[in-house]
Length: 222
Image (cartoon, rainbow, N blue to C red; front, side, top):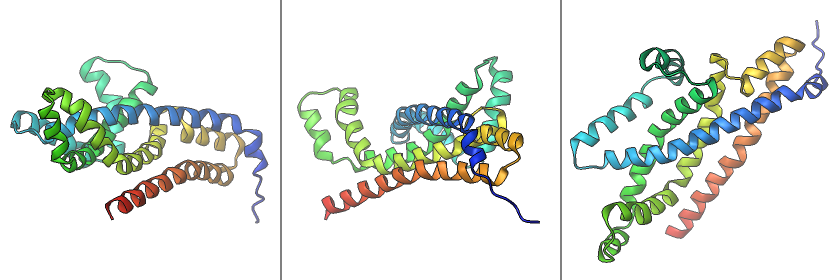
């Protein structure tokens, strides 16, 4: 028995997918903002001479990098309220979970970038009488951010795509609404094909931007 494709059914019911996409982007952008700030701080802790700073930072990075994303998301949604008596909205928990997950990856990107900052720039800050904190804010962070942009953008794509896992804890993002729509109109092939194309259409330009940054850096170094 042949299957009659009907993509018009998706166009007629595109509102829920658009709403879900809006929430997915909101979560991904907020998680990236958290991950850039926290990832840089964790990178500084990883590079610290004090083991009191290195040890918790290393444990944080290894935990999030060595456990499945889905387990981490479930832990946040079901364990945080019970352990800490903190009750946040599903959207806020999703942002927090993805932000911390992404921070562990950004920390490694920033660590390599900080180590690649030319020593002459830091010495210039010392010569100007800048305090260690001001050297971090005005010299090290901007330079490291420029060096880490390709990896940070790649991790940003990962955050956007990983947000689909939040559908399993009833966050009404793109994938959750797609499942609801598929059950409503009985068009799973068309629904999930369109959703895959949406993820692809948003991720591909960012991926090309990453390639552009890498080519530009290679040309500058060459």
